[in-house]
Length: 207
Image (cartoon, rainbow, N blue to C red; front, top):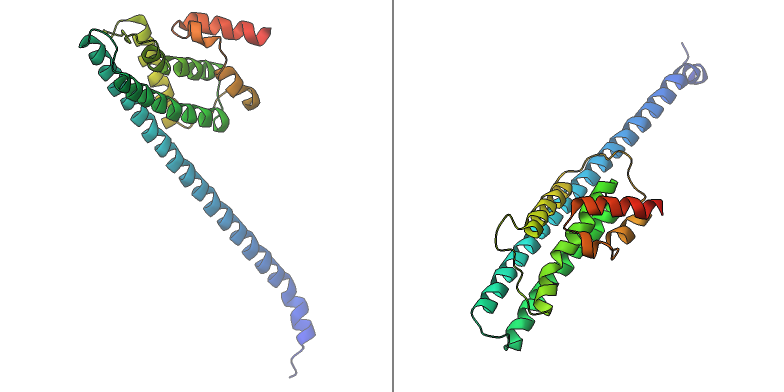
């Protein structure tokens, strides 16, 4: 009995094609899944790094704040320029690090209008220490019920939650507009009042 290669190939070809296509699809899907999980892992690592840096700069803010107020309370006048400059440099460095975190959130996260407002107001709140040192004034958040201090803590919690929680946002704002809105000077005067911030943001977007 002679072997008919042509007949065998005609019969086996459909099965071979199906096997090849199936193998190719499985390999592609496997590679896609592996790539997806690698990307998620990388994003998670970046989120953890951002969270770590956020808490580091927050701690530096508090340490510099306490040192600055102690310095003012224990000297008759701000005469030591070296001390003032060192504390101003620390406050500015912490502020710069926090600015980098906020800019990343603005460019990489899907943010709602309220999230944009929170980031903008937190940015202004974090600048208070540097500005007080520059003007040689204490940051007089002497108790937890001081309105500005309470607002600062509220905003800190919201930003920290945003960094830690990667979730979908309904009706996200246009990312091209986010950083401009966050850095708008209008927040400087109203950051401590949540209702004024919401009203100003609505008026600005409608205008």
